[in-house]
Image 1 (cartoon, protein in one colour):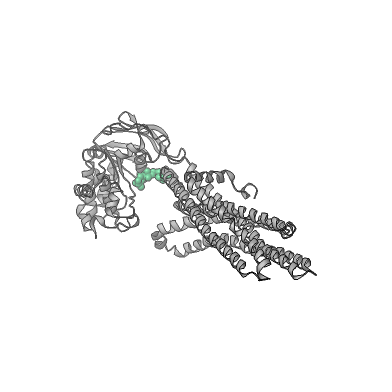
Image 2 (tube, rainbow, N blue to C red):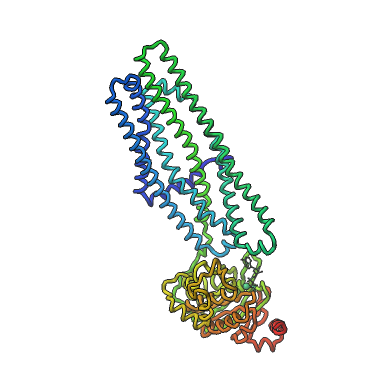
Length: 587
Ligand SMILES: Nc1ncnc2c1ncn2[C@@H]1O[C@H](COP(=O)(O)OP(=O)(O)OP(=O)(O)O)[C@@H](O)[C@H]1O
Ligand SMILES: [Mg+2]
């Protein structure tokens, strides 16, 4: 309880500040909602009068008809206003949420890779999808509806006092009890909303990971076990919801009970009042009682709704807090650098470079290396030696801690990030393909790259024929994350992707997994094509690919052990020679 039991007003006010982008829509929603609050409370007044004057003693059918039409008119008006108010407040809410979602997503896209290393994908999906859904309600049915209900409540009570103040006080007697019940209810449901928010995230994270890792789940016969885990999580999810529903199902009958109590008071009062009176006198009293019965219903409904709406606001605020946490997170590469015209046909130099993913847990130690412009340098080394890490630093996906990387005379960190990435292409070790066609995956949606460019690039890399062999050629669907293609095929596509961007610096991080002979040959040829005439770094697991490199660098446990040409290193008889002989004997 304590602090958490209240609405976080700071978050709430920040959320409300989004209304400013849609002032007109906001005012239309407010106006229609305020207007909607008026006809409702007037109806009992008219009906009461009708009962008193024309129904019990029906000598004046024309007037009765007139007033009946007025009541019908009011109902039609109310229906119309209800439609407008609901339409505009939802339009208002959805417009705001669209903006918020865009803001959230574009912010997430700037985060460093490090953030994604430690945040489950399911968590982010929950933020972008279901959290924003809950926030929508704050604007659509929460905030504006609360204002409407309050106005309607105020208006009804005024009319009641105006009609008969003593009777009004009488029917209001159970209200303190109602307020008490509401408070208890609000507290109960608040807790379950908080639990619900946590449960939804847990569920999303679980489902997302299991489906992504489906082959592992099936391969290791984890189905039963995972299903058990899922049952547990699903149970938690159900409990959180059931708690909320339980609170509702206790609360609403209590409200009914209290409103019946009001009506009972009313009837007792009526009975006492009409004792020993003439029929004419009773008539007016009777009309008043009818009006009050209708008002009592009208009174309890908004109070009941207010408790509910308060919870919607609360739930939205709990979720908004989590969304703002992400929006406020400055986990992007802060100092992007401003240099937009440095020369990329220059050498790359690592100068006493140290890097760790986690504090001082060095993955790269004191790296000193110069890669001359236009040459090809190959990295070899055992798995986990730090080859991919070095490449990640060049693309500035991570920031190094000590030392520097230079491009010519310019520090890498001073170069504008977009400019840098436009000029360096990296074929990552884990090729990621988006669901879509082969063509889409090569151009990545860049309109400047035409179909002809892609075909030409594929031809020069030597994979055009392979692509044409696919069911629909360049328009074949690759499936989610390229599921419909083999590892080798995916890698070839990513080669074309790099080639078509015609970068100054090219980095190829070869996939570890073995590929079939045909693909291997294609990959080898493509590598030669790609690296020709530009500064290239090739990480190879098959040494045959890199024999011709201008320089081969052997990395071991984050340190450079040897460097030189193929011939030099073999002559030197160190680590590289052992590695080479090992592979040679395997083949
Ligand atoms: N995102 C990360 N967060 C923390 N540690 C990481 C991360 N990525 C890699 N590492 C660690 O950094 C070290 C170097 O990994 P790296 O991926 O650079 O090796 P590699 O030489 O590319 O290996 P491989 O030949 O298997 O691709 C490893 O010990 C690894 O555990
Ligand atoms: Mg690697």
